[in-house]
Length: 289
Image 1 (cartoon, helix red, strand yellow):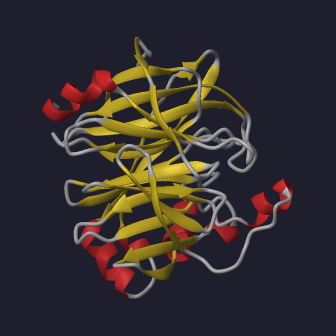
Image 2 (cartoon, rainbow, N blue to C red; image 1 turned 60 degrees about the horizontal axis):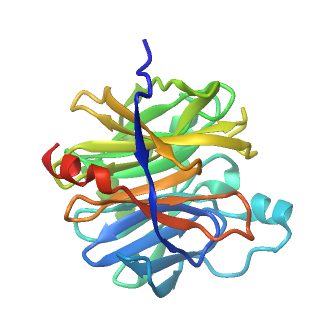
């Protein structure tokens, strides 16, 4: 039986960001790194959402026409902090153009070939669509978003040591794949939920976000009817699921050192800047989980 969505948590907006398609974020000390799925840059803010700097990930410019931009964008959907302090941005893998990543170390950027790993994962999913990632218990966990034909939400478990070796060679390989854990999510107002991000709270608990988007395509967007925040136990089973209000498409989740979560939303509209939210109600739970 799928876990019902029984709780409701209210989002509180902290700021409006300088990008319109925020897809992932990472807290690192007093810095907040934000990634967008239709941009070639990584932006840095403070924890209140004030803009500080921008890091170019890939050279060039994307076209302004929405259809052309969607076709040509690298679709960076996941951002994670590695143990030595570097950042890793990952493309979704939903098309051949979206199989690049970027390793960011001390202001320098190295482009990473995700093709070897993503080809291995494509053997397990009808529609590959990596939307989140986090380091957890000596592994790198990826969130496979099941908004395609098969509705295949899953956690992809990679060997962290192998990932770090692969990154030295400028790639991620299939050798890092350990196992895949399917994740069954319920519907929200009749629309299936699908994973959008993963994050670990200071107390060690693993959280995820998911959104209910009326589409059966990993490429085409649909109307969003709402988002949820969930918590997983050590066996990667869902133990808590809460609906978020107001209705926004939450795509990124990160925790500050004090346990306060930060979340970003994507309106799927280049004219609407992404909001940065927090959840005051979760702070104590995040510290103690």
